[in-house]
Length: 302
Image (cartoon, rainbow, N blue to C red; front, side):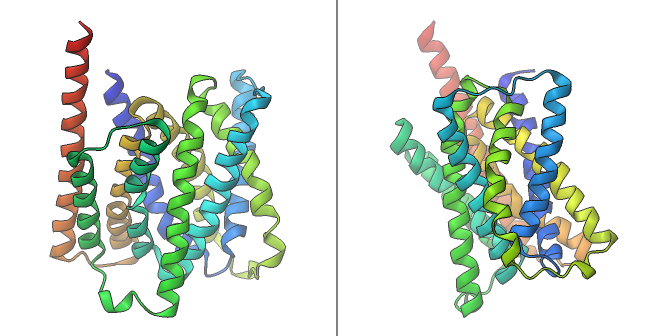
């Protein structure tokens, strides 16, 4: 199995579980605050990762000079990201929230060019713009609904989430050369906890409304969306690169739409299927280009 194939299989895991997580979060927000959801999710996930590391003998030691990157990825990239995302979903629901997340590849591309010197060409920009148009069609949002007070707050929060995720990606990249995936996400989760826990006392949580279904959503968010999702996304970033991995985030709204159809009974309009086709086309263009560049580089090295 090639590195490319491993990367594609790895990134499919977070795309699936994170796409579903938007619906899980929307369900839980009826009873719990956004940072309370994040606190439960990452306390459980951090404890699980610690047990996994002890069982596998993975080192818990990290260099002092790298702790700043772990704080940046954990605090901003996870703590603030989920504050913005969960709060955004409260105002605009799961589906349109997933639309804003589709802007991640564009921001990631720009930041990677500025920080790591990645070259941006017309194919890069074109593929990302095509995917964003596709996602907009998938979400089938009425423009008149974008400018109410709640919608503006929701979209502003999701924009904050996009920027926080780019920070997470950029801060994570240098760590792959020195640490295992388990070590990276364990410390990122650990350093995110203060940002969640300090906010919990200030939220109005209705614990009486947390029943079996809500508990199952919390388990899903903790185990699948957090532990498995972040582990395989870290692996994908290492194998595919930060920008190419982020492009697959555009699949999240597709997963959200399909899961919402089966779980909530939401209908899928023809224009949404068209949008899904454009997203897949954009990813195909990107993958074909990456393969062409890889072959060209291999020929130059021989």
